[in-house]
Length: 397
Image (cartoon, rainbow, N blue to C red; front, side, top):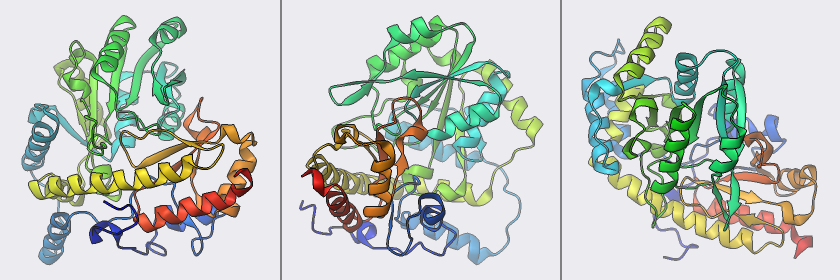
């Protein structure tokens, strides 16, 4: 497959999202000073692709019916989750384990609220998805950063260091699996080590697996639920949002096998009066289908092409290094070997290249010299971004 030749109109078509109240495109001027007219939006983690046709048809059916009342039984929704997890991930889920939340940032907040108290420590393996720290801080819990280490061009966990760091005030770990922003697909051995660490320190493990379907060829995601010895302290979180580009439906799943943990979470859900969004359930049900599965397979192949194009171009620029991406569509680029201050790096990316990308410092300790670039966009835009970056850092050639 030539990386320069469009091969799939579902993903190669340029869709103008400007002026649609789209955060990714309509907010980049205010956030980064990058013009929506001339700039490239490569920050917010949603894609510039339409979802599979089965989702569009499901929504059309709702519109054609024209009555938008309360959603009834969620059994059929839960059954599609059961099917997907078994078929795609080899994980057997029971219907009564599944709770519907207003997306997974909301799910994270609910877990923190249900299983920790103000002042408790919540562990993050940094750098990591920035919303975790924001929610922990707002809940008046303590953010405990356990920095990842770079070995052989990828992130790894250092449990000897983490053991020495624990004080006993820590009550929870939030794991990003696969990892955002580093793109790691954690191995079974690493997940087992994490399980042992959680047990040694009596920690609840919340595993955010929102990117679990977006795995590059040659890699396989392992759900934390399939690791021995973790069931009694594990909270799983999944969603269709990243997989099918449905972030705006704000529909996620908190899946809890242990009955005691499930009872605690259920009481908090009831106390807060939370219920499902019918549009989100209809979209998710349609996506979790054989047609949706085929679309995801094509999408991951396309994203892998974008990744290879981007990495080849960026790694050819002296001083820039794109971390090997095993999953997600979020490239993690290290600028430290340019010798530049972070302000100068950001200026070149935003003013010279006119690209809106996430600043690495927002992901916590270890992210300071990085920027995150969203590759979930037509390949022509990825190619243009590469050309702009090469020009912006052209004096390093």
